[in-house]
Length: 245
Ligand code: IPE
Ligand code: IPE
Ligand code: MG
Image (cartoon, rainbow, N blue to C red):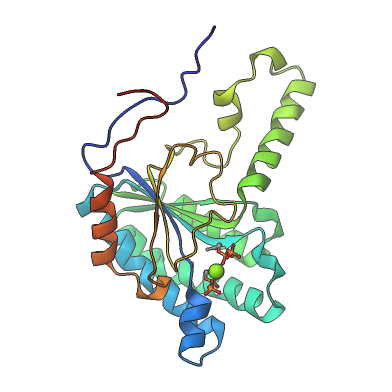
């Protein structure tokens, strides 16, 4: 029988190369202070810079952060509009900092539902930071793992229908090549803040063999020290990928 060669066993000697974070708990952080949820989102956005900048010293080359899910449209119009405005301001404000610190920015998720002004800023920051390589920051915006696989499948099906791909040759690598994350390595470590122990549709395909850490801290309280501690724990884990090592 032919063996799948997609997953390569490698025990983590150093730190994780790719960390993905589900930044959860902004709303509760604000509620605990008697403030509107958007204040929590603003506090959360302010936390991102320090975490990105901590990456090089921890050996983290790729950081992927979940900012808005395909399900988050179900929130009130006020919260959704507030978040969209926050994303615009965040990108504009951080542009200079991305260049100073060699941060390459990419976005994953379905862009078409986002407002034009935001899409333009996303294109601009991706083009501007294209030559940077200190940290690869990927922002998941209007991202859902199932939606991503469905969109990938649609494009793959179109290539099959057009005769560009032989359906009998379709394998894991083929499908992975159509995902938004096609240029990124799979995450080694997925962190979720705020105490919830669920994935909420984040990087479903890519996290097949990721290690998970569920942290009680709410995202606006997440510090580089906590980040370093969580990343440090990863080194002690044995990743087996189904094999007996
Ligand atoms: C995460 O914080 C940020 C987004 C989903 C946009 P939440 O807004 O989900 O905060 P909680 O979970 O309600 O506390
Ligand atoms: C996941 O958090 C999405 C982001 C962090 C952007 P949610 O707060 O939306 O997830 P659920 O609703 O608790 O599953
Ligand atoms: Mg939440």
